[in-house]
Image (cartoon, rainbow, N blue to C red; front, side):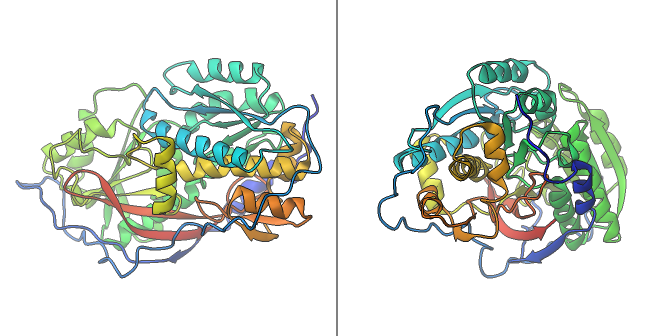
Length: 451
């Protein structure tokens, strides 16, 4: 099978990220008064995040109306566009599976309602990715490739993606993750076939590190998952926090599959940091009670996309009240949430739903632009449909422009989605959220950044 020529040497792409990140705050953030009682072992002095301001931050892309019927494609295909998903329904990131799968299904539904791609309905095959403790991802990937998919949407975990990326791209198939944030993929030798709608953790790390400093923290402790996601994000958080004048006084690692975290918690608490960053997956369900049991106030806790979820059934009310965390992507609009709920009424979380939806739209539009359903041909057009042309925000509107001979610039539910040669978003929002009395989180602030 032919391989796609690279637009630019992959190693050069990492250099671009080193040029720095520019941030434009769109609103102010805030936190609640601490509710934990008792004698805290951690120094809570100085933690006071900026008060919330008027406005909730930047909104997601406006939904452009579809002006009339979508014109028929002048090019048709004998082989319909067939997509696979490799998203978690089991394992430590299983809580991210439902919104990601719903985002994919919503995208497929809307594309097919508009007539599909190149005259044929798009097909989707869903498979579980599991996590790095199992070999589920390899088995699922083998199954999807055997069924002739042009692109695989997933995985969510950077660690899981590393186990199958060479298998997928080596087959001439696109791998398009809605949630991978490890910086390692920027320079990966992927034959131009790896893309993502989630920004590299160079951006999330910068935002979180700077935000903790803006809250007055002078020292930080971290508990970090020892994998590509955890250590990569921790490195960028540390770099940003130290550049802002702070000091990381403790950084404790654990491995996927570990169930005991007392040692790591004891060491971080003993260092008496002002703030504590938990860079984990669902291990936070075990770590948070250990922290609060030692007097750590929830307002000292800062979490990340790997563990930002609804803990209302896991903890006593108020356990996380005032804790904050970051999730890549802009705040989901209510109208988009309603569409997601129509696809999956059981949804309680929408994290990475927009990124998954955008992945489907971008692949479908690139196939139209390429007039082909082959993975290598679609990949060659992904960057082009994300930049420079006429702005559009839905498949019907965008494909109408394409079929009328126009260049397009797709802006999605996750943000602007302008790709670099590496397949990374070059600009994105990072949302900052705060946990409430019910241990679920609400949006308080967005940061817009360019890589």
